[in-house]
Amino acid sequence: MKEGFRQSMSWLHTYSGLLVGWVLFMVFAAGTASYFKDEISFWMRPELHLADLHAPPQAEVAERAFAALQQRGAQGQRWFVTLPTEREPGVRASWMRAAVPRGQPEAAPEPGVSRRGRFDSALLDATTGRPLQASRDTRGGEFFYRLHFDLHYMPPLWARWIIGFCAMFMLVAIVSGVVTHRRIFADFFTFRPGKGQRSWLDAHNAVAVLALPYHLMITYTGLVTLMLMYMPWGPQLTYKGDTSAFLAEVFPANGPRDPKPSGISVPMVPVGPLVTQATSRWGGAPVGRITVNNPNDAAATIVLSRQEGHDMSSTQPAMTFSGATGRLISEVGEEPGAATATRSVLYGLHIGRFGDPLLRALFFLSGLAGCVMVATGLLLWAVKERNKYSKAAARGLGAGWALRLVDGLNVGTIAGLPIAMAAFFWGNRLLPLQLHERAQAEIHLFFAAWALAAIAALARPTRRMWLAQLGIAAFLFGAIPLLNALTTDTHLGATLPAGLWRVAGFDLVCLAMGAAFAYSAWWLARKDGRPMVRKQPAHATGLLADVKGAR
Image 1 (cartoon, rainbow, N blue to C red):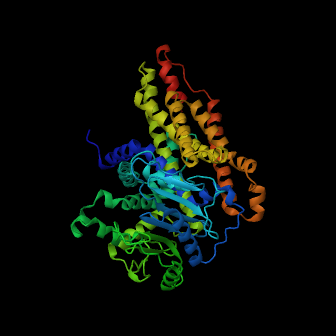
Image 2 (image 1 turned 180 degrees about the horizontal axis):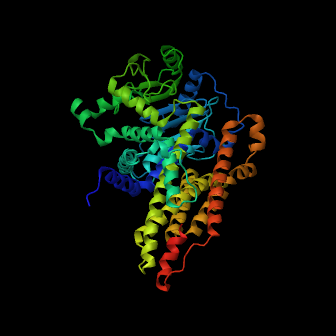
Image 3 (image 1 turned 30 degrees about the horizontal axis):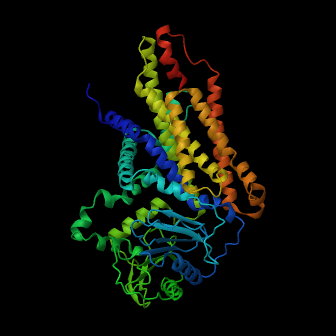
């Protein structure tokens, strides 16, 4: 019989979500955590919790940062300095190392300096300009931010193609889901507990409709952030293949894309007056980032860009000065073109850095709703298929490998990923401070925990595995405040009275996450006491027991 339009949309909704659902769950979870990446990074550096990080005027901070860079990267091709904000009190400085002659060993980085590729970076004390050596080596919340579109171990280009492919499927799933559900807004107010498949559908509908505008926005804007990679033809045609000119105009904060040095050594002008001039030009708005191309060269340029958070745009105005004379070379970004402004606002909406803590908390809750939406969709497919296999098993047929695979992936992702995230935080507190490449060790621990959970889930995708992994996630998250109390002086008993909300808030959110996982495990354990398997023919009880056990 020929299927109608709505049935076709239902099929499209089901399989566009199922095929990439596990990747989407990770993207939603890591992206949701990224709304508070600065707060996560601060919690993961407990040595800074009680430090006096009051920042002096920006001009002084920039001068000290430049002095630090002159000592460490005077021969490098580029410097980057991110000045302190309310959320990040340290000065983030990175520099490209000078090339080492072939055959000569490269010097190890000094304490407090991390190395990635050709770049070294350090978190500097805004008052002294020295690396915060007491601060432990960690990627902090930046790891989750990069993970949700770079997938860490993969080449970034491949990872972004994969994420873009999954985001397109997500957009198709959302639109087809709206078309499929004729009474979608009425269904939002309907939840029938204890009805098996119907209950999962009700839960899926409720969280999907609750944050539907957010789901549409975050998926579409996520695609926009990478659109230049997917559809490069417009810029290629307009700029006649001159990619550097295009990137310099779209991303003015970086200055010229591939500036050439003159080879003539010239000392840099003081950066403090340039910071003061830029702040005055922007009506008192602070400088956010400073980029130096070819430092200590006659062709050096210093690019100052405005700090984010003053509007929804992700692209901020920038001023470019000569590093040798201090002459203003150009100003860009204050009146961007329509295409640049549109892209910048959409990108700004996606990353949400313009919002105050309350708005970011709303984004965070919407992101959690997205995680639940994806998870319930995956579980709903498994529940539907299990019903079919129950009937097949009653006729003496076995369960299919696809259902077992989906059950294993569901357990390993929906319960396994939270275990990995909690293990990342535990590693931050328990790994030795002097461990070589400590930040990378925390990340290895994250993936090792996730791999272990996934392998166990694929080997035994049963209800008991759900119980075990949810219980582990509940313990790991719920005990984080206790772990923090045992390893630092900034426990809830100290941070709440002192109003240190960045630390207290992290502990409280972990406690809430632990309670949520504990409730899920308790709910599942309560179901475990009920009869699960009806009497089946002896030859059908093997796989069927596993299938029903995964309920």
